[in-house]
Amino acid sequence: MSKVSTDALVLGAGPGALAIAAALAQEGLKVEALANHDPHIPWPYTYGIWGDEVDQLGLDHLLEHRWKNTVSYFGQGSADANDKANAPTEHHCDYGLFDKIRLQSYWLNQCSNASVIWHLGTADKLSTSQRISTVTTIEGDKFQARIVIDATGYKPVFLKNRDMGPIAVQTCYGIVGRFNSPPVKTGEFILMDYRCDHLSEEEKDEPPTFLYAMDMGGGKYFLEETSLGLAPPLKLETLQKRLDLRLRNKKIEITELIHEENGLYLPMNLSLPDLNQPILGFGGSAAMVHPASGYMVGSLLRRAPILAKAVAEKIKDKNASPAIIAKSGWKVLWPKELRRKQALYQFGLEKLMRFKDPQLRAFFQGFFDLPTDQWYGFLTNTLSLEELVKAMWDMFKKAPWSVRIGLMGMQGRELKLLWDFLKPLR
Ligand SMILES: Cc1cc2nc3c(=O)[nH]c(=O)nc-3n(C[C@H](O)[C@H](O)[C@H](O)COP(=O)(O)OP(=O)(O)OC[C@H]3O[C@@H](n4cnc5c(N)ncnc54)[C@H](O)[C@@H]3O)c2cc1C
Image (cartoon, rainbow, N blue to C red):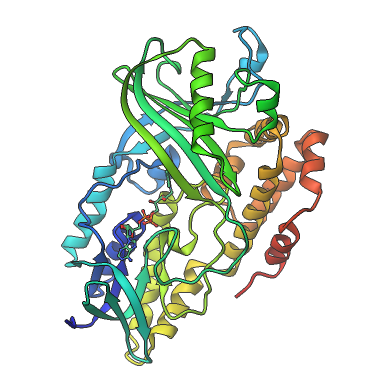
């Protein structure tokens, strides 16, 4: 069955799809969306964001939790509480967790106020002519639009990304529960706890992992053992075992397991999409995840209105083909400066993936010793290219020789990424 054509067809119902569907509709475009599930079904994950970031967007009311006491631990760790290696690095920046239902409703309400029409179906085939793009679902429905925005996540149904070799994947094993004694201090949020005194010497030689943890209030805690990014990824059994060892070392037992997050998979160094294809992408599909932090929601909120404006402007030209509209969208979604920054971030991630545990801890200690504006801007991707280069250079100058040597040696695809930084692909 063929459906009437629309201005924009958004594929998916994750944060990326909702953000861009809402923004396009607010630009006055006729928007339809196609997803393989009801868009009101709650997402499987809960999303975190820095306090300043959410405040700048004026969306603090969408948070479920907000922590003021935000710290990391980069010391060796030891049983002695007076040991300096146990001292926290204080971030002096609030951190928040979105109430995922509120965030989803925020975008869905914008969609319904601007008359976005939702369809249920699994996008399967795409054809593009001079005038229109047609998406066919596996159920046999056809949808036509002047522009298609593929927001179907990290394994997009239609978007083509450049092949950059093995993908570095962040894996985590997390639990929400109650414990016989508090696993983190009251009101504390831990971004990274790299203390590793619970590991044997052989285990310390294996790829490092850190604890991401928070006091959720009411006696509940969220603990997640995380591997920053590896290709091939660290196994979930290893992460689970590490979390278990970490707790046992502190004689902490789980008294109630409320929720278990198993099998979380987050590709960190996705290569940029081919910017010459006649469709657009948004979110994970368009490699918008931050290669250093794995975060994306702040970026979705900031960049959706920019992309929507460019698309709406181009669509006014009745003769503009899907390829022309897509080109104008890609130009604002991945401008040259952002592509160069992406190459630098990915270059940095390559380095970190090679670091052994002591190097990694020394690196992060130095990173969070940078002025807050620098490390915060680095992690939220809000620095200009010049500021990003300066932050990385300042970090290099401060770093101990063990870290500098690791940063200087070129291996694998690092040279290619440096070349992309100097001369980004179009
Ligand atoms: C475990 C984990 C934790 C994360 N934590 C954070 C965090 O704390 N903060 C942060 O900012 N970011 C975080 N991220 C990163 C990022 O924000 C999320 O991955 C986010 O879910 C990506 O949104 P998306 O809409 O691009 O993709 P997805 O959320 O994967 O959504 C894709 C959508 O497309 C639909 N779909 C797929 N194929 C088809 C098809 N053929 N036809 C129709 N529909 C289809 C899917 O059903 C889904 O609705 C995290 C990611 C992971 C994996």
